[in-house]
Every structure is written in C-alpha cells, then in structure tokens.
Length: 127
Image 1 (cartoon, rainbow, N blue to C red):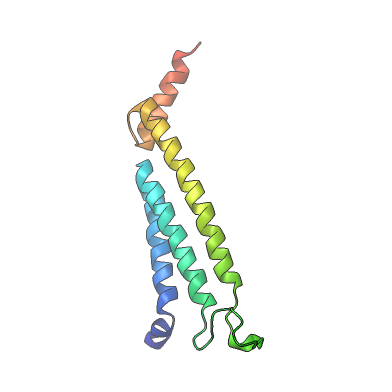
Image 2 (cartoon, one colour):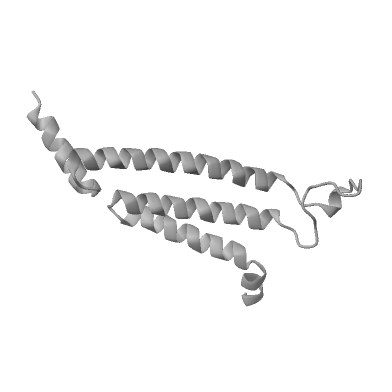
C-alpha cells in the first residue's frame, strides 16, 4: 500500500486537495471561502491532469533533430486541457468575485443564510 502511495504521490496529493476544496465549498457559508474552495478544486484537477500526462524519460512534444518517433515524447493533450481549464477558471472566478461584490453592496454581508433571509424580506415587502 505504501509503495502505491509513494509511486502515485502527486495523484494522492491532488485527491486530498480536491477533498479539501470540496469540503470548503460545502461546509462554509461565506461566499469568499466558497470561491477559494472552488479554486482549490480547480488547482487539484490541473495537478491531477498534469501528473497523469507526464511520463518519466520522455521529452516535451517538441520535435528535435527531426526525430518524429512518438514513443519519445509525452502526450500534449493533458497540457492543452490544463491551459484551457486555467483560462476558464480565471474567467469564472472573476465573474464570481464581481457578483460577490454586488451582493455585499446590496446586503452588507457575505453569509449566504443572511443574504437569503434579507432577500426574502425584500420580496415580502414588495406588493
């Protein structure tokens, strides 16, 4: 068992990071903590994809000296997926932060329970 963990240590760390981010997302009521938890989950996913895509003894997928033997290079697809995911993650984080700022300006709190109660009160006051 220890040998399995040692040989797959990066994957194990990424699973632990994902669990930390997921529990943060589920258990905290503060919106900023939820955003941080989602970013930890994103980072864990990128770490996992990168660790799977790396094969020891192989080179980056850049053709050198005209050698096109596929067995000498790593697969570039995981790296492309990670780069695309990072761009999407930054965009989603920016939108979430903008919405969080708007919610804070409207309700003067970042606690989801308090925001929900204040929003219900506002709906009851409207005819």
